[in-house]
Image (tube, rainbow, N blue to C red):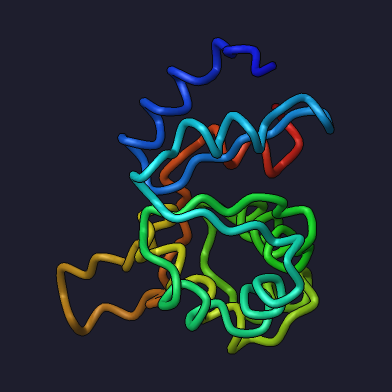
Length: 162
């Protein structure tokens, strides 16, 4: 017997409003069941405990997202620790100058992977690469963009603050 959850209405509203919604909680409480029932026909659904889906998501995320339409529900993300470590490394640098090499070192991936994953996050509206403004072209200042997450709640979660 399925028990209706208060979180269903919130999840549905957030899924309609945002390109990415993170659902967290203890094991075996019905998160996947709720997500499966709430998302209905509005978006795709992939579980990363499927070895093929996990391989594609971690080895070639661009192809993974080309194979799956947006909006997409990705369940069982704990099976893909590399992207999670990447997100944590990025969240630690929000508001700072973007240094791909530092992020690659912290996430234990190469710089090309960081570049691809960052492009996906930008296309999804999760992060913004803020280019510096120069009123005078001859001014010599840093031309490195800053990294900004669009959702401060996600940053707080990834940095361990909630």
